[in-house]
Image (cartoon, rainbow, N blue to C red; front, side, top):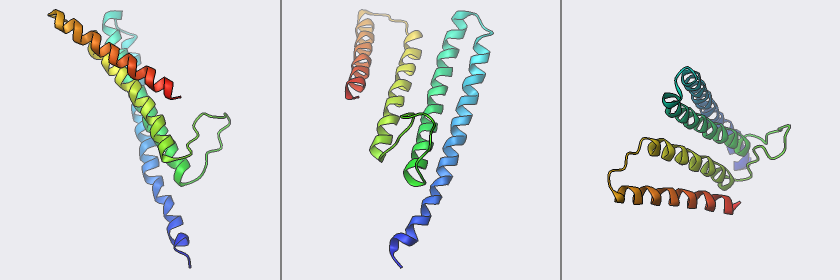
Length: 147
C-alpha cells in the first residue's frame, strides 16, 4: 500500500477548522447586523462610530468566510460555484493574497475609526496624521497595482 493512500483520507480532518471558521464568520456577521440595527436608532454623530465598527465586524466575517472556503477548496474538493471567479483558490499563496486584501481593508477601517476620534494638539500631530494618511493611500495603491 502506498503512503498516499494512508494520508489522503486525513484531509477530512480539515473539516474541523473549516466548520470553526464558518461559525466565526456567522458570529461576526450577526454582530455586524446587531451593530447596524443599533446605529440606525441613533443620531448621525453617534451612529457613525457604531457603523464603522459594524463594517469592521463585517470585514472580519469576510476573512473567516474566505479562509474557511479556501481551506475547503484546497484540502477537500473544488467548490462548484454558480458564478465564476467569486472565490477560486489555486494555492496557499493565492489564499494568503485574498486574505491580505481583506486585512488591508480592515486596517483602513481601523485607521478611519481612530482618525475620527483624533484631536490634534500641535502641528506635529497634523504632520503625523497626514503621514499616516499618505502611508495608507500608498498601501492601497500598492495592493491595487499588484492586481
